[in-house]
Image (cartoon, rainbow, N blue to C red; front, side, top):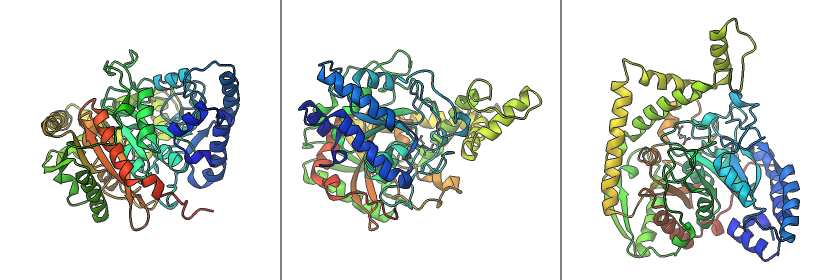
Length: 491
Ligand code: GLN
């Protein structure tokens, strides 16, 4: 049996019955990292060797009866914008290439208490700005289904590592789709929780009113389990919300009888690939067969979401990234004559082109002459987006759309055309603007054998409905049983 074919819930069961050890699990994943990493390049920093050592200690503790939790000894991969004390957090940027975090993010603190083991830090678009992981200053990550294609982004390293079985599950972050879209491209499950459900403390900020950490997993059950582990109020993050703790796995009943589903027609129009439309529609029809009630409706504010998102995200990014000045964190230019030149040269040399583009755009929309015309307008449209979703959720339990307008494309196709890259976020950004939860699950593959994802959107803090709906379809479609990445084009 190959342990890396198992989901985390299956591994936990075996660990519990003492059929396997943590060392065996971690070694199996380390072997896969050795086998695939030269093709996939999902990691920025591998901690595989340290993880093996840690697993041995954990096995000893387990034997001695010191059991912290049933997750003790389970490995995980972490997106490289989430801080682990004593480990590099680069955000895949030259700016933070040698930055070693002096503290743990809250989610990492929780993992340490439970006894989870980090296998390493995963590649991403620089500062999470992008949709293909091509904007990483480190290297490009390749999609395990076809190595000539992108894994999506910005959490492309996390999604590719889960798909390639280099990690059993991973954390990503999602500001405008960065968990869901790479999950869709790599045929895995990606969940962006409600804004405020998971602490952002220790997540390097991109756009603070949109960012959320979330799980990227092999299946929906693992997604619910990982959400159980990371959700919860944190006084270190003033935007985290104090909601009652839930066990999300309880929602996985397999039934959607009577579930009211809304399908917004704007997400099935021009710009969405025909095959994606067709396969996602097939998936929606399966819900009908399972007894859900499906209705088409109009969410026309969605047409303005993309513009709104790019104004708000860039404005917040320009402010958040002000802290990288060559003095307090990260990269410092070698040559400068005075303080001003130190700032300018450090930022010029430390940031990549996409990050600079966003800082410039963000500074522009916040500048005194343009604030009202752009930033304030965007905030007003944001209110309208929320209102339309509120109205929709007064009628429907969940909303279904494609996750991405297309499947994974060849590396290099869009990286020189920022606008085309931005357009690829059309299906995901509204969810962040409204602070809602959204999940992407794989439902089928294209003619070329590339995964297609369905997005399920829920109302605030209604992750249970969304996970329940996702689980029911997963049980019916059995995507994992029928499709596997083949590392096409690999050695
Ligand atoms: N692709 C989107 C962007 O470039 C989303 C990024 C994200 O969610 N971090 O902004």
